[in-house]
Image (cartoon, rainbow, N blue to C red):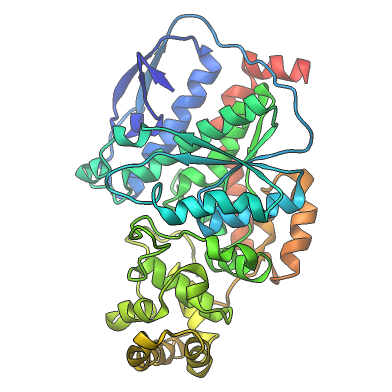
Length: 450
């Protein structure tokens, strides 16, 4: 969205709340209320994650000038525009889209910042050039300096554990993909969003979402309602899959792409991962549970296990956040992976794939794993879920059945009352955000001409 002469991501209105935003175009009452509700939801999540509560609406939108009526773009066949970064999630999403649709267009957004390396480096360059050689896809790169416009720790001054990038990356990515789709005559945008991102819980009259809520089906569903008058839809194919299942699908069905996985935002130049952080260690354990050396996905297993020397297997791995599932927690993914993989099996995998110069550290790494496994086996946690059919219902309808068939080849089906309740809350929150549009003039214009 444009505020005056400055491009401002809408979630920043919530970070700056309360604020007055003056727009040089007329949105009309319906769309103005849509944006206000979207900002209100961001404010609710910021406050749930520690930010100070403030009364009243997060922002005031003052719009004037000419209206922007939707121009419906002609669709060019059964194509989708897919957000692609080179990470496991977007790689699996690209592979699924290539299998289910006709030659999808991958959109890679490059917006480097001093505090991260996820948009630069040799590994990313390799993923960008190789993906179109290995899948029937095209790729276009969009460059931007947009992410340099904010201070990543700004939200922490207000007590929130959410970083500015967690609420601000999606607007850049979504806007870029939608613009490319419109120019290419593509009628749908897809963005990765795991099952974990769909977790939610009711707290009073509010719905608390997982910390990556900007990628969730709630936000994507709201944007879908906004884009429909322009003839563009928004959605995802990975809603039903939890974090380890995305990695598993990459290693089982799309292993020819696994060596492209670029997994960490601070990977040293020339490397695909740092191999010494919670995320790399987690992915290493998921790979070992699949019987695959973590080196296949660019992670040094000796270093990754070494990082775990002083950590418990049931430690919280993803930062402090409110509980949003009655029975399950993110660390259970790790517990399940270690419970399922014997120390002997890990030793066999690593013995075949450890360079001579690292052999002397192998014994120490295996001892660390043996300790983690002993801890895991002593724990009682809920069974690992299969792919969530309730979240499958959030996938675009025309792809839902075929996607479900693919997932059923690799994972068991899970449908639980709690997941069903999460799906209903997600739909209700999406409907509340999008409600003004359904009575607005743009929506009526689209309905008349579709």
